[in-house]
Image (cartoon, rainbow, N blue to C red; front, side, top):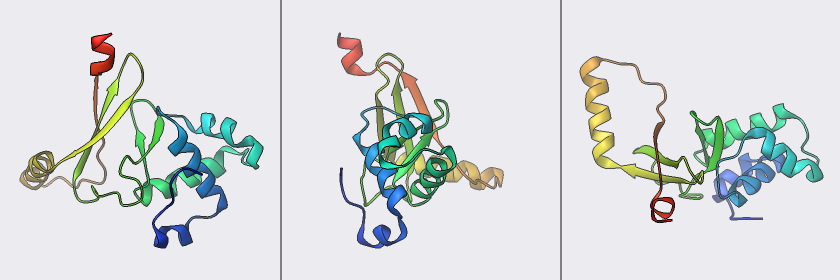
Length: 140
C-alpha cells in the first residue's frame, strides 16, 4: 500500500477509505471515481456511493483534492501532513499529457484573503486550476 496516513487519521479511515486512498496515491494522473471503482473491484469496492463517501472523507481530511474542471481526484502531493491547510492551493493541469502539479502560495493566500475581506464575500471553498502545457510536453 502506497504511503501511510497520519496516525490520528488512520483511526478515522475505515478499510474502504484506506483502499481508495492507496489507489489514488498509485495514480500518476487525476482519476474519476469510476476509474477508482474499476481499480478496486478486486478488493470488494464496487458501488459508486462507497467511493464517493471515501473521497469526501479524504478531501475533508486534506488527503485528496477534487479537480473541478476535470471532475477527477488526486491524492494530496503533501502526503499525510498536508502542510497547506492554511494556504491557497492551486493545480497546474497539462492539457496534453494530463499531469497535475499541486502548489501552494502564501502570496496567493494573502491576495485571496484580502479580496474576500474587501468584498465581504462568504467563501466556502476554492479550487484554483491553471490549464496549459507542462514543460515536459512543451520540450517534446
